[in-house]
Length: 485
Image 1 (tube, rainbow, N blue to C red):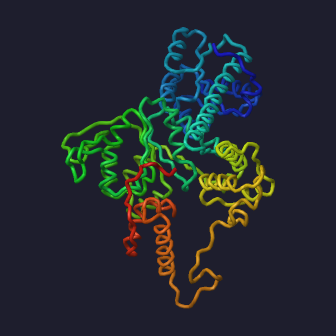
Image 2 (image 1 turned 120 degrees about the vertical axis):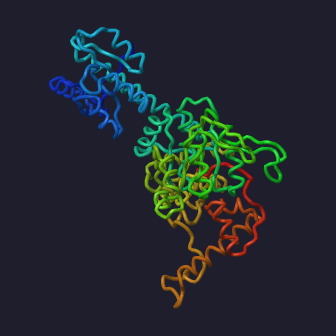
Image 3 (image 1 turned 135 degrees about the vertical axis):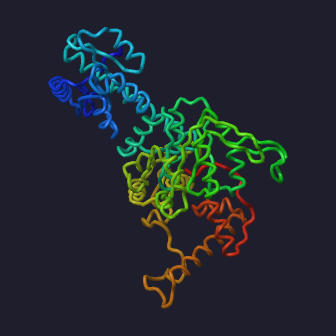
């Protein structure tokens, strides 16, 4: 039997769903749990319970076994499949065989109790144990996320209530087979969430990632599905693709919105049928891989525009998780600053580094268009430039000190708000885009992949505009498949 916990703390603000076909017992249990600080909802049978459980956010379910319509065993089977992290306490009637409750435990129930053979304190204690286990699992997941972030170069997802809600969703979804779509601006930590889903899934296979926007179609197909020897020029040996390499694990498709219509058809097929065909092969191969996709684009809008397949969108958007930008969760900034300061101070052998109040105030008021990734880079730069053990505001970039989102580019409209007569927005944007891409290519020695990263755009987008403007960039994509998060 689970060890006892402090019920006053465990049930405080916990959401509990009571399911029983007896109105009087439902009311009694609602009053009982609410007197311990819980927020309680009730349902008269399993079907009514599922409607309420669909909104998520519950910490425990207390359900009778014998009910008309959907009984407790059927409700339990559904929850074990769809919400395995949600603890269920089963109640049996006085004259029911104890073997019925034992069977429920074998099927995944957290605990059971017989009506008529318990006092109120005992029932509250058991439900409190269930809630405490769920919260411990969520805390373990949060710690795994932070540990995974440390291994991945010090990324951190934050600990604000908004991010804890997202981690709660991650903890519920991770053990399932559901496909997940993670949306959010670049730098918000999409890959870190994808890795957390894999870590919490219990899958024995590998976690592999690919940036779909960093490859032209022919190379992306080979990376995903593999190829046979001689399938194309340069294919001197057969190669296994990521779908095959990730068999039994998780494949993270970063920037999925950058895939071409032709590639979308191929992805849809493997998602529907679980089979694929390597380039140059006539043989079908199978893969039991979980897909987690991510994008910083509005896929719904792309579906309306006809640039993204509607059927593929619904295939990858089974469980949507949206990561808010850092400017919408400023409560996370101070903790992130502390984390990155400790990390980079240790790396640079500068123990005792701290952030001055004025510098911290500037960091908290800046809008962070580059999100967590930009904050991380700013702290690394500040520690490298600091002349004492304190990071002063002077060590921060000018745009952060002054609270500017980005420096205004030079050009016909840069000197003031009034535009010259005859200026056209499209022409101005074309001219600005051409100059920025040209500068990025020059800075990176013509390397298109790094130029795209420098500008925060996909390789496919940069290649298109470089061709449109007749700009010469030397090195095509294919240097790496890591996601941008």
